Length: 112
Length: 111
Image 1: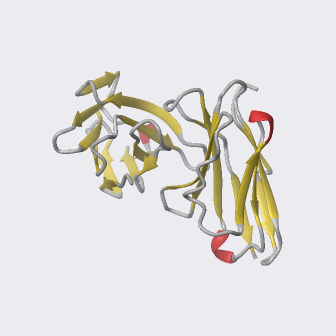
Image 2 (image 1 turned 90 degrees about the vertical axis):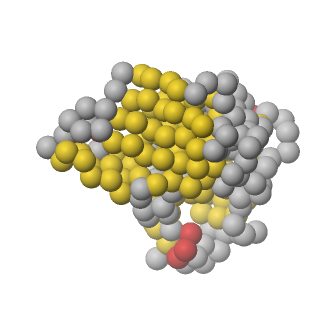
C-alpha cells in the first residue's frame, strides 16, 4: 500500500485479556519496527524485524509481549494478560534500509 | 546501548522567532540522526535527517547541525509559524540497530 497501515486504530480491553495489534508495512520494505508511546512520553523501542533474520526482541518489556512477522510482510504484536500499564499508543514503522522510517498511525490501547 | 537526551521538554516562541532543540547521544558509533515531527493525534513524520559525514543540513526554514566530537546535534527552525506547533523527536542510530529516540520537545508557536 501507499503507507504503513495499523489496525485497529483504537482498542479498549479488560485487564487480563489478550490483544493482537496488526501492522501492514509499505510493500517492499524489509525492516519493520514496533515502538510504544505512553502519554506524553517518547518512543520506546519494542521489537525489530529485518528480512529473514531473527528478530531483535531486546526492547520487549516482559514475556507477555510477543510479535511475529509472516511472509516478510504483515506483523502482529500480541500482548497477553494485559495490565493497565500497557495502555499506550503502539506505533509500527517500516523502512527499506536503516534510515527513512515511515510510521503508521498507531493503535491506541486502553486497558480498563 | 545508545542513549539520547533531548532538551528542552517544552518550548514556547513568538511567531516569527527562531526555535532551537538540542539532543545529545552516547554511542560514538552512531552515524544517522533524524528528526521527526508529531502533530497532535498524528503519526511521527520525518522532517530532516543528517549523517555523520556532514556537519549541517538545511531545508527551507529548518536546519540540523551535528557535532560528532561533542556528540550532540540540534534542530533549528527559523521564522516560526503556528503550524510548526507540534512535538519534535530526535533520534540516533549506528545504522545496524533500531533508532533510539529522545523524549520529545513540545513546541508552541504563539501568534
